[in-house]
Image (cartoon, rainbow, N blue to C red; front, side, top):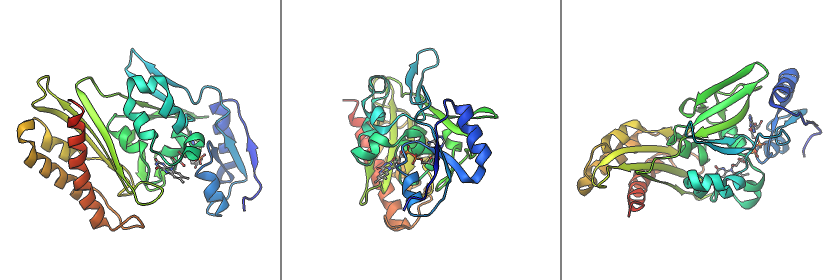
Length: 290
Ligand SMILES: Cc1cc2nc3c(=O)[nH]c(=O)nc-3n(C[C@H](O)[C@H](O)[C@H](O)COP(=O)(O)OP(=O)(O)OC[C@H]3O[C@@H](n4cnc5c(N)ncnc54)[C@H](O)[C@@H]3O)c2cc1C
């Protein structure tokens, strides 16, 4: 049963933040409600005031800024909007590819990117991908605005660097360059993903030498992580002799993740799957050059 609550519909972010500040623990932000209403119904949390963000004009805007090179995604942009948006398709089609496989059409139509990142449920996809795009999270409150790089945003399962009265106004990502191809591969046995690996591969102009790799792993531990040591192991490797480098990078990634036992499997199983999926993601990214 959902207990009664008052729904506030402020017209801007400052007013939204001020409402949460005023009602304190009795209030929270509400976007698509796909997570929030579930946990309220289950009695895991109780709020007497919900502050609706979806009705704030412009908060779901998706734009690319030529001057800065940032693709900016408003906090209330839905998964479905990201899947379809022409700017996303042109500038960072990988985001649409990932969004198409988030949840189901009902959740994608209502659920927002802000809700996904702020709820920080470990079994989620976009945060892992955004780590390979050096994303920055813009937060705003009645006190002012600040930016948090995505690798400092996630603080653990269901925990982030965001203060309760801060609205995630947008996430900005840097689309990969023209010499880069990337993939997001995921695997799951339940509704939500068990494992997600994002890998962006940059080759030299002859496509014979690795000039850079960005690798992030999500879902297996409390938060998605970028694995710099595994990336470094592949740097400057010749594609013709990639096997041992890739095995070493996969091993490093499997050892580096803070895998936990849960309904999706044991920590040991997840570490093995990370190794498999890092190799698989690398080959899939390389195949996108041909
Ligand atoms: C059945 C099911 C399957 C799913 N499968 C997947 C999957 O495969 N991959 C995946 O990535 N995700 C999956 N999800 C998660 C889904 O992506 C999220 O439920 C959705 O994105 C949350 O967005 P929302 O707008 O509904 O958030 P809400 O439920 O409205 O809010 C969630 C939390 O975030 C806070 N919040 C929301 N927006 C903001 C904001 N802009 N600023 C500050 N705080 C904010 C709220 O206060 C609340 O605490 C699944 C969910 C369900 C229910």
